[in-house]
Length: 265
Image 1 (spheres, rainbow, N blue to C red):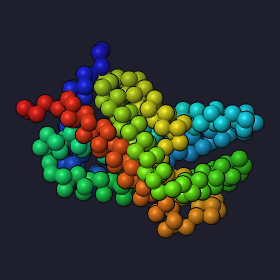
Image 2 (tube, helix red, strand yellow):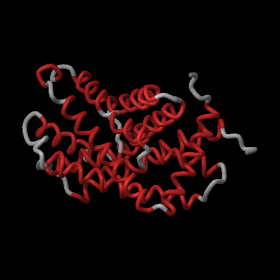
Image 3 (cartoon, rainbow, N blue to C red):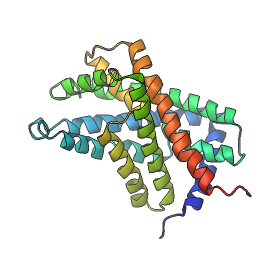
Image 4 (spheres, rainbow, N blue to C red):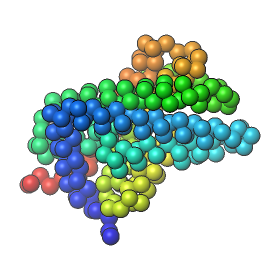
């Protein structure tokens, strides 16, 4: 079966975006569960990427590109689960709600409401998974994972605000392109491949994904990283989140809707 055309993908995005807004506007229990699950799935991808990417120090110590590749190859399982199982992910919704808004299916206020609620749900899911199924299980308590997660977390709050913002744009540009590729496919394999390639690329390139950081930074803090809550918010979460919105909403949602949305419908 042939993949969908760009115009057909936009039609799917409009339908998906309108459905997501409808869910966040009335079906609060369902929406909360789907948002929490998305945070869990992304955190699951985070711990898998850490475990495999940093699990072969004797091989990767002199080959930093290999460590990035291994981590990148593992992380996409989170987005694959989100897309295939229909969970609500803040970064994906940054792009998906824009075509439906541009098609007049709902107000921009509904977009902001959806983004705010799903962000909270993603945070709750990521934090619960990180504490219960990572920290309490001791997955990052031993070396090389203990030092690796501390190093990752501290590095994420040591960059300049603008650097994190720009890396946030890059991350969600890749993530939302992955969502678009998944929408173009029909089969499970096509959707998985669409999710895997761009997400692997953003991880390997070291871009900043706000929901993934809801795993990496708290996990590092739980292991003793020298990071304060306010510091993590100001130095990473705010610029990464704003960058993610710009990358997803503008570079994917707006751009592709402008290019391919049938305005006559």
